[in-house]
Length: 218
Ligand code: GRF
Image 1 (cartoon, rainbow, N blue to C red):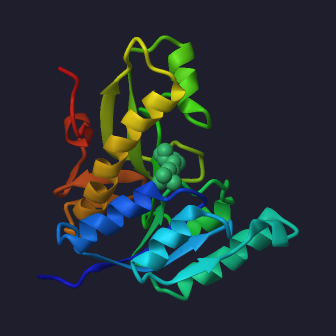
Image 2: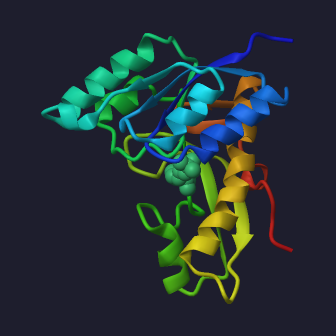
C-alpha cells in the first residue's frame, strides 16, 4: 500500500461532498489523508463535519481582505503550509485569480453541478429545468484559469424527471457528485489519472470521452 495522497479541501458551505470524501477514506476505499479543510466562511456547516472527523480546519475570511489578490495570497499561504499533493474545491464559492490557479495547475480539482461544457456558472439546476433538458449531471475537472472549463476527469449523468423542481434535481445530482468526486481522487491517488500541459491522461493515454463517463443513461 502506497502512502495516502495528501489533500487540502476548500469549502464554503454544507460540505456534503467533503463528507463523501471523508466517508470513503474512513471505510478504506480511498487511500487519502485530509491535512486540512479551509473555508472562506466561518459559518460553513462543512467545518463541523471536518471537526467531527478530527480534521484540522482553518477559516480564511474573504471579507477581511481588500482585494481578491490579497485574499488569494493568504489562502495560498494557508494551503501551502500543509504541503498538499492535491487541492480539492468542494463547493468553494469564490472565483480564484489567475496566479492562484497557475500555482496549483495540475494539482487542483473542482466539482461542478452540470454536464460541462454545458451550464457553466451558477444556478445550474434551475437553468437546466428552464431549458427543458432531459438529462443533467455533474463534472469533476482540473482547474484552469477559465472558469468551469478545465479538462474533465469524470462526469455522471442523471435524468431530469417531469415533476422535478430545482431542489429534487439538485438532490439527484448530489447523489452522483458523492460518487464521482471520491472516485476521481482515487484515480489520481492511484496514478491512473494524470494531468500534463492541459490534457488529462487515463493510464498514460489521453482520456477518452467514454473513460470520463461514470454512468450512462439507458
Ligand atoms: C455542489 O453541488 C458542487 O457541485 C458545487 O457546490 C455544491 C457543494 O455542495 N460546486 P456541498 O457543500 O458539497 O454539499
